[in-house]
Image (cartoon, rainbow, N blue to C red; front, top):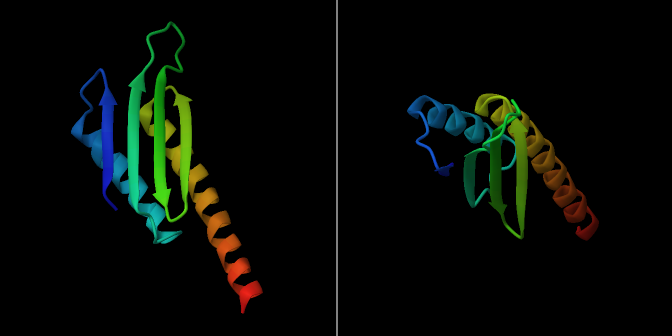
Length: 104
């Protein structure tokens, strides 16, 4: 899956980009009709330790799934967001199966 990653107001480490790509690629195991995925990395300027924002947007036929997580590190945000996207994709696939069974 092609992941378009944008780091807002900073340069992302190539290792971080590779980590994000690997995690996002795993989502194809749960739903293979992903059209496009975009990731936004932001650092909030505050005294709060939870200042890393990870936002992922996945386009699938007929819908767009969005997850936004704020954590201490981008890696932690990626893991939590991908787990959330996994659940959403599984739920979507299950709904499509049920609708297909009802039509048949």
